[in-house]
Image 1 (cartoon, rainbow, N blue to C red):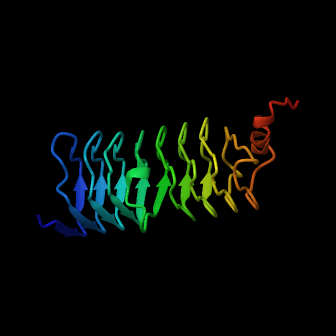
Image 2 (image 1 turned 90 degrees about the vertical axis):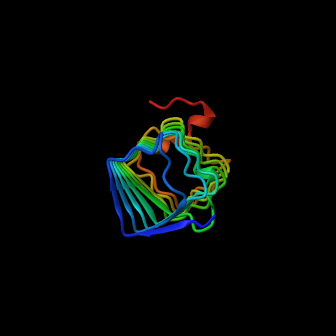
Length: 190
């Protein structure tokens, strides 16, 4: 089966929940206000694409390629990034809802998360070195055996990180969110 190649196309207001997006390689395409919820994006390549105001919750992504993909104001609840093709994986998130998503065991150096909800997200065994979490809600987000070296958490909140099970050298914290480094010790600070 030959896969299609689509370049420089804009898709607006389309639902792919019942009608699947054709398998292929999408290069420099823009998806605006599209609904992909619970759809199959497996083995589709997105290269230098942008998703704006889209719903990508609970999608299937086995082998999906995301290279230089930007998500703006998107809903990605339960998105299994760990099932995507890890080779060349690079993503940027602005004003997105990523609750319950999984980035397990991925290399995401220099990734930007800006004004995102990241509640109960799994970053276990993830390399996030030199990434930025700008004004993000990290409530009950899991960091375990995670490389957080040189990560900027300065403006984020609801942060809990165990410094004994994560690499945090040269990570940046504000005075307020640095208390999240002590939650493991079950101590009270007034």
